[in-house]
Image (cartoon, rainbow, N blue to C red; front, side):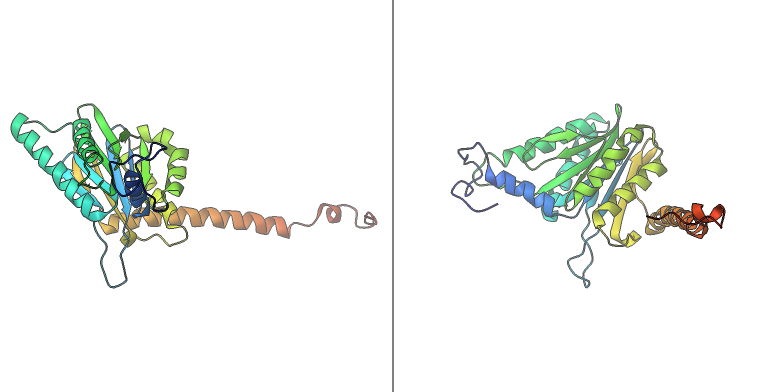
Length: 272
């Protein structure tokens, strides 16, 4: 995208009906490190890639706890995500204090979308440059929403945002039909495998990803590095065994004599 006369103000429409400042904010989401969410009927799993600015610095947090039944993963401008997660936490606390019941996930998502939409109609504000995957559990079951900087929101079975997220989306699209009946362990495995798809050649280690889970009878919590590494080791071991079986089959095929040699050795070979 290039600078033009219609992108100096978020309230200025282009002749083609576009708001360029909003599109730039959505582009910022694509530049952030990948975040992934998926849900079953009883659990929601959020995962993200830990990307540090340099080898001398630590990575920034990309997954935040909102309440015991709600968590959020972000991609884009981390500072904006931190502010919005604080707003969500405040909304959840206020609802619990007023009504003495947990805040429904859908209602919180609508409040968040309204807050983002206001920034697209005020000339002295700018859109939030962050996308949020909101996962939660309420009386109607497990939910996963994506909140866009434009103020739109969508509910998903599984979704990925951020840098190189298309590879993770492709993996999730192949598997999402089985997520509804998946156990917590299977969801965690699929989340980590989707994270691996976004690395594109890098070796997946527990230090490169953060995973959080919530579900029925299980408040929002982060998985420790040892648990994540055990899951990674499990499916890497399975992959190595499959490669070994494939290699043995190829070796047997190579060792077997050609069909012409297995027959009568006195027969002259056919001329080509």
